[in-house]
Image (cartoon, rainbow, N blue to C red; front, side, top):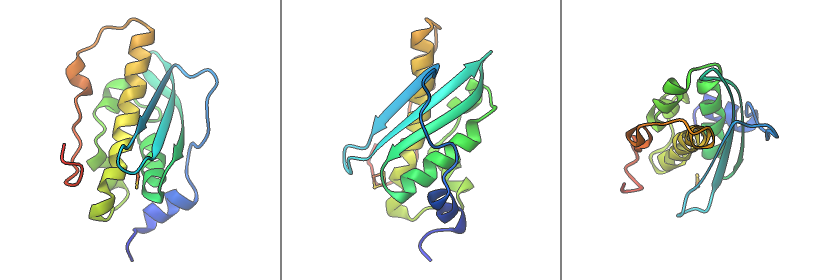
Length: 142
Ligand code: FES
């Protein structure tokens, strides 16, 4: 079996799908190679992510990764969301095939972009280092 049960579960029954009209932060990222796009919406109160939604136009692994990532950051402080790596998402999914690891990178990037959007919109100062990519993907060459 190429995909773990968790990947299949999050692909066929993704959590937190949708959009948010009153989002406090929105992150949209795309993968230049495959053309897939992921958008993450955050509702933030007192530095805590109180709600999160995603819409992903992409492959099954990208959908499963975004679903898992939203579960991992919901109810958590922003500082913890910024620590989320694609590797942690992949581990939580019980793995992805090597050539699909790059799909999970979109989830890490979309979460970071959404937090950054929130900081920018609210004039909150931050250390740009926090947004440095920590992803681990042997295929994207970054
Ligand atoms: Fe594009 Fe998976 S193939 S994100």
